[in-house]
Image 1 (tube, rainbow over the protein chains, first blue to last red):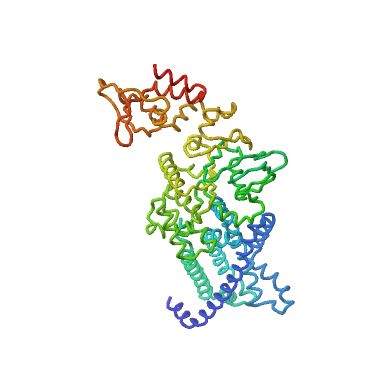
Image 2: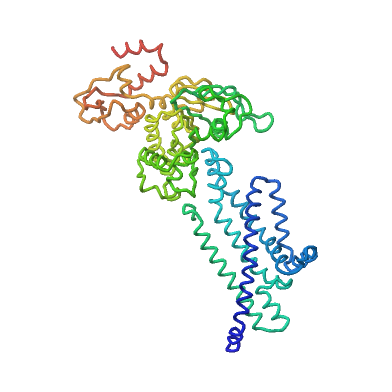
Length: 217
Length: 335
């Protein structure tokens, strides 16, 4: 145990650096994923035919093993000299986040009480007003749940990004495996788990904050 | 005034949800669309604010064809109340009530003033409910808020789709009374959907009785009860149509037509009833045998006479046969 603490002491700034890198990668990926995913989700509510196709495609995306997806990206991104590193990792994480975000946004808006939608139309709201004032606020808890799923998913998958040189906490685990360094593997795993738990809790608090008082439970 | 001119609606091909409907609604009237589910009454109502498209024909409000108006502006000028949970759960009560004024761009002060007026109209404390949310209110309170929300921008026309249908009978009756009271003040032109014949008799100035997208009969409640136009109408309103009709008449009306009987001073066990009591409730009281004699008094507590089942029955006889039987009836009373 003392030995492990000694390991942590020596490597503290290294571990911290990798953690920051991990947070950066996942954080930027999530922001992009939210912008794309929520927009697509909202758009799909107006286009039923497309909705099925897009949701199916997003599901397929999620079934591709992450390590394979990272591999597939390399030749494409080589074309712009970004074959390995931050950019392909970011793109892969954005793609993985799409399913939970699109699906939750789509179904949350679709499931807003039809009587409420009817009333919104009946009082003379334009489509945009209905979306901003009624549909999104009432769908918010479910949309946020999708985002939380995506964040936790991404923190985990972000580990694999180390294989294509994107850094992050995966580096600790990859190095640990190649050097059979137990401390390194354990540290990497624990920090990733902690990160996921903290992120989920923080997002839950944000979700509670954003949820209009009238629709809690 | 609202005119329906050859209004039809078909969703697919041949079958018509609403079929060639023609009638006119006078300003300040409550007209109830009555009929079983699937008769097209709700569709017809929703065509007025264009939540449903009109397949054929036209609807005119004060001579203006609604098809030619901007639908968003049209809806903001028409109050709309639905059965349940039409309130926006994410908005507090003040925001809900003032949504239409808000969409119309009223300033904050004017909206708040209006909010206070409306809450007073339904007897709810504006301050207490302001920051509360719909899910914190009882069903009856929610429905009242729904009604005043529709009144907020003072629209000349209101559409109400079974507004009290989800409430339990006691509360429903209370809110109906309250609503009639409000209507006496605001005098809106109201189109109201209901499947409840008693509600229609109580609330309506006129009833549109529908079946399979067509109007079976259009007339006053009294008219429909006394002269059902066809077999379907009389079946729908029920065998007790004469009794129902009594709910539209008061003792005062009976007194004017055929007079009351003299009080038998030898009877001790008697009960008092106000001259403005409706005849249906009076008859129920007589049938209940609550007392040996029912004495009628007016608002100043002056005794007018007594009423008996026989008297009610005679009055009904006149009413149901109407005018031709009137003189003969009166003579009989004199004997």
